[in-house]
Length: 349
Image (tube, rainbow, N blue to C red; front, side, top):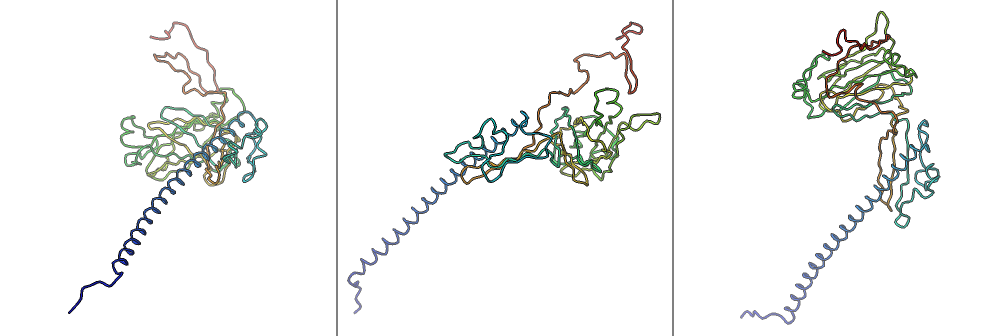
């Protein structure tokens, strides 16, 4: 006869095993929630410290800009930097604020490294449609060629861009087919004088026209016009792909040039200028400021390009009016003229 009776204490052992399993499961759940909470707290703290480090770096950017504007950092010097990795003791703007690098001593928030590069290898200009921007290019050493590149304003459609650099279309046809703008550059070889005739004699105009294909470098002639007058206006093909356009200009042999940029057909977000084949440093223009901010053990680094404000404003047009303008005289390079205010013929019909 088979007996189904349990051995003494067997039911108690099952209860203990079930209790142990439940305790393990509950412990794992509690540990899991605790780990999630700890991770969320760490992430929140990291975000807070990251924001503090970012604001500390922004403070360093603003301090450097203020120092440049007030002449405490000489823009003619190639570069300037603090003692990175240590307390800032040599920053010239500390003359007016000895504790400027420490923003919050109790929380160890500061900017620890500040670099000012007055001779960056590239020069950048932001240009919207219809805007005019003037850049002063001082290049050391004078490059064999200067590269001008800019991104497209759409998806990179090149199929309907002109095959001839001298072919221009009405704006509606151009914008609908070619998503790259034409970059116009009026380039003046600085002669150290404000004489308008001299400026006109040493200025050339370049239209950099997007094309789907290879471009050729163009050598510019800045010599004054003579009987065999040099070319004053150039239409240069720019080599474009699905991301950007690039044109190469040569003939920059002088110490300083002023370039007046205008975007045609499409806005040009950023023009990047650099030496084409040889490393070139740009002086007297954009300053690159690089700052590292620190909050406890979290660091953030910011790099900006800063153009010191200039007292001279460059107008978009020589004359601007909401109505018709009747021009009764013209002035060509090398000549002078006096307006004729007589009524024969009438100034305006």
